[in-house]
Amino acid sequence: MTAERYTHGHHAAVLANHSARSAQNSAQFVLNQLRSGQRLLDVGCGPGTITVDLAALVDPGEVVGVDNVAGVLEGARALAEQRGAQNVRFEHGDAYALPFESDSFDVVYAHQVLQHVARPVEVLGEMFRVLRPGGLVAVRDADYGTMIHAPADQRLERWLELYHTVARSNGGEPDAGRYLRSWVAEAGFVEQLTSASCWSYADQVATRTWGSQWSSRVSEGAFAEQAIGSGAATGDELADLAAAWREWSTKPTAFFAFLHGEVLATKP
Image 1 (cartoon, rainbow, N blue to C red):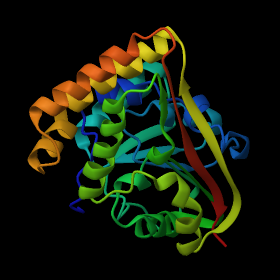
Image 2: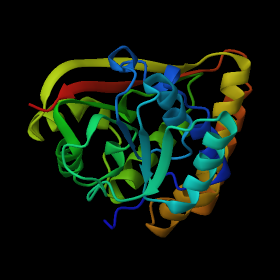
Image 3: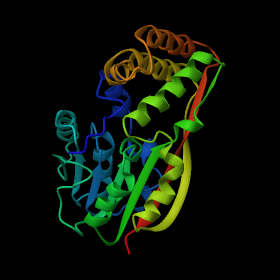
Image 4: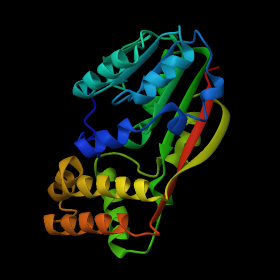
């Protein structure tokens, strides 16, 4: 396994955020390319909420979700069973060495994965390997450099600066969304479409949920441990940033938004 550290970790607040993802809110850019009977691989599937949605769209085609954290896959399997998804399975594996034969998938999808790896083109090369000729890769990643918020709060500006520092010290690229097009080309794919989409938080439920989750994430779990362990922040500073998130989340005019880069490309 490769030694990069996952910036978000698997704190309950992280899993709650990831479990709210669906094919509709995280894979819209590829949905019209999916067909019944396709074999699809979801790289970095996490709790499997998107994976199970995709399985319904290609049924009876097989869908495989792979993640390098075995523990998170138990929840994914339970979700598949709960939804009665019989054409999906989940495997433990490394994106740098996918445990599948070459030319064996029609579609490879990866959501918020390439921002966390030190060698994204190498990971894309593995996706290229397991795709059949003519197969489709679909990758989507956030671009933290596009994050905006209101009302203004210098502590949230500091949070964003700190996030960049910690993520890059872990080997990742938090502004990955803007680089997907070049990484995909370097890996040998033929680009079909590059696009961008926005996530926004602009109502009371959304801002309270987003702010509460980030308040926990900056003060507990992997991000907090990494920030303090690397000397990038102190515990007192993280507590102040957590308070900033809580305060922002209750503002009646709170707003937060950011872009994701998206690329569809084929294997020649």
